[in-house]
Length: 371
Image (cartoon, rainbow, N blue to C red; front, side):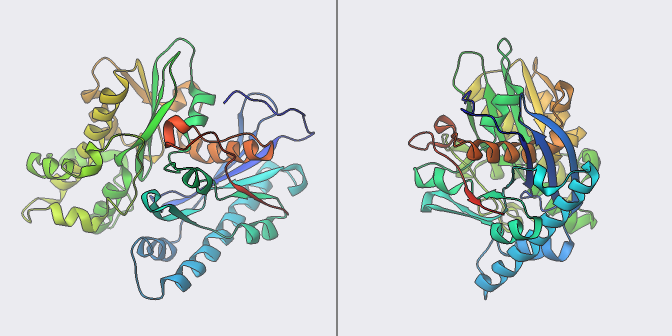
């Protein structure tokens, strides 16, 4: 993935937009790719709770869901446009100075085994509202080529966090956890390891009326239930070999309910979910990568101190720290990656890694919606 565009253009400014499976907010960044990738500005707006609930409901079949999905895609796109305009105002830039927006969209179904993935958004509407070209639908071409369509960020991890001397791994702790191996002299490997914030957040919202467990304090107050942990780890996804990806279809609050015995204390379940995330990720890293010298954490879960401690416990001798320690802000890494994918598409450069997704080969990812 070291190809460079054959010709330079005046501006290499791109915007990246990401709203993940955690459904907590919309992240938008401004990036410069005229030389080494640089994050110039970032902004976030919260996801309205009613829209988050509607998007969550669309993860499962329901009455009139085609209409509801289209209405939700319009609503989330208007939020993307709002966040973009706020970022431009903050940066004192005009729309004409931006080459394109890379927008991931909101995933509500991910079924690569059935040949499709669904990210709700309206790219034409986003181009109309912002007067900026939009690059979108990044996952479909990889799936068409026989891949998982996810994760797509390992190629960007290689670009900004790879090192010629040190064996590193990058663990993105969003709604779902995905890991990337960056080992000198070896191919980049990456895959989803299982649930991260989505189960912990859902359980916290149900029992504490809080959107997330700040710093893992509630989980720390409980005790992991070994029997419940064993039942959760018996899910066939954990034993599957890469390439693999997952979503709420596999790991939902409804699935968790089927694993409960009924007498667990709520705090103990939260501690068990943190342990499920840490143990499944650490086990996958050791099984498929060997022990890296350094594990770099990004995504919202990187702020969970208890989760970070559990990862370090399961990976003795490995430096476990946030990617911020190397100058790459973990809170914005995924949005940054989709700005980069827009840049790649703009210059007709491939955006996937077949070793990661299982696709038949390198592919241009996404479609352009002109302003």
